[in-house]
Image (tube, rainbow, N blue to C red):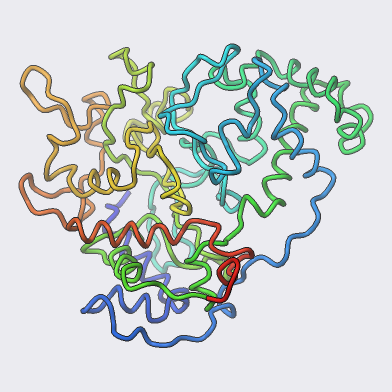
Length: 439
């Protein structure tokens, strides 16, 4: 596995060679030249011919309509009060509806989970998990390490498996068996529809019925455009229906500048294959050394560690200790609507996240505790695995203590302004003009 900062150059070069960078036009150019903000911003044509935004929504299939009913059905939980939507709120980009580091569930809604709830938006293009990913558009591509898969550790292979996972989690919907879930569906108000969609004998086999629950939810998450709306201001800019403000443009330049923000290293802002709109993730994994979160009850046990790819929940990679502490890079779409960040929900504002990135190694005392007078860095990993933490990616990691951060407070404000353009709801249609008026 080669260092991230070397891989970054290859991936950006491949993107340029493929012509993907053309969609950003003057904005991408602004990220590579000084001064950062050209005055005035040069005019640009519509970008729709490069990016293929979804067409008008089609009616949901019977399977997807059934999945929608299941998604909002709290009676399928052990408590009778928790549905998929309880943690994946449509009003919060299908992410958590509150600022809790981990959500409460279980048979009495008093059990705490161990990982922060991710958003369900923009998951449809997630590739299959592999420990050896090769960037498809790059000549002389090298092994870039693990990528793909669903959940924060890539341990499930599909949306329907991901959808079924909370049903049996004792900290979430807390059913004890697959047959228990199947029985609840069989007694539900939509049981007849379930039979119509999956066959009259679907309930004869509880395992088939349980798997069908996941397939129905997968259809809903795939077909319903609320899971991939592409209605952000960024999309409107890319399609020629809006312009960045000067502050947003400065932030976009920082986002792409490998010596300043360098966000595009892991959160690609370029279109994917066949003009797919930017997903703002590379689906890869990284160990960031996020501080241990005392808000998670499981962390009160000093012997407990959530080590991502190598356990304790994922078992198949337990012996690959070089993967300990690695978690999947999330999409940054709708990131500033969140109130919890990283796999353990340690931070509660995007500003705190950025300060952690740019000060983790420069001012470690701001992030990590002292024990017996000694600063304990990367304290959410056992000491034996702390070398897995990324220390090679400038400008935020690998800097000597006491150095000046790569971004000033003004820079951070500019970067946040750009990140806010990734929030859906700016327009009514994918890549469309501002809702309620002309741009």
